[in-house]
Image 1 (spheres, rainbow, N blue to C red):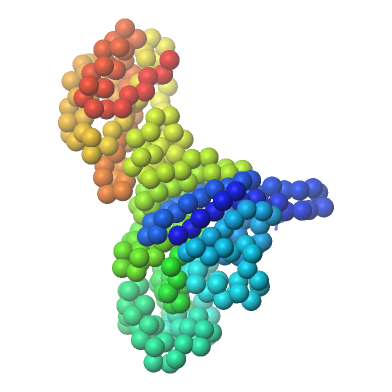
Image 2: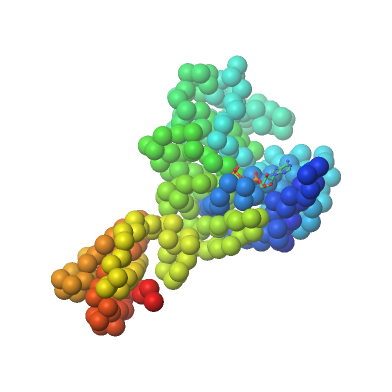
Length: 325
Ligand SMILES: Nc1ncnc2c1ncn2[C@@H]1O[C@H](COP(=O)(O)OP(=O)(O)OP(=O)(O)O)[C@@H](O)[C@H]1O
């Protein structure tokens, strides 16, 4: 549904060229919720601007639902843009219009007939849980409710793709959860493909099927969450199941063990760890729910002499083991 190939974006400034995207490839199948994470300045906003056609890339290809975006003329691009739903951190609703009028605005621009418009607006307000608030003005709604109106408005023209740029970073934790649940429902009920730009791993854990890390204009790691967490020595895996790292004493070996509950049940894994004996200490541990299943990661200190035996026992029990050399 979203196909980006060898995308380059170079900003020409008086101080020299700035390479914001440097040969970026990204392929997101229909119906997937994909997260993009990366440090400030990595090129996330530039990527969104290229996907929507708001910025013309220097080279490369962007195809959405089979349609090449980069070569479209300006009028065709404007029409095309209506079929990409956009959700931003700042919702930017029309303050003098009701929630229903805000949601119906894209349909009015597209000259949809009145009856169809009203039906669709009512359906969308129901979908986002604001069926009874259509007549409310933005100042009468909470931040989370305004974001729901923004999501309903983004879906008005029935776009196959929803691009969300930090959709929840202005919201508190509980409201964020609700907005992410809504995004998941939108995908489940409407089959929309969703791309979420975020700096919060908790957002990725809660709602994404797959994730990419963007660094200095390139995708450095990408994959389905469940595959990433079972990969060894992955930066994204470490961010998805983080561990506080206490100091390791010199006489001990440092071992990390991780598992997903599809391979070994968490209580069984805990029993294996407990049976290692008193000389092995669990110094940190995390259990997270990812893609509907449990994953866990533990850090152990074991006496150097016991290391081969401990690695063997953990591996035989089905845990993935990494031992620091
Ligand atoms: N209009 C512009 N002109 C010149 N340089 C730009 C422009 N927009 C972005 N850049 C530069 O391109 C690079 C990528 O910026 P971008 O805003 O895409 O990153 P980002 O990952 O979205 O960062 P953040 O998370 O801080 O918003 C940065 O070095 C930035 O300074």
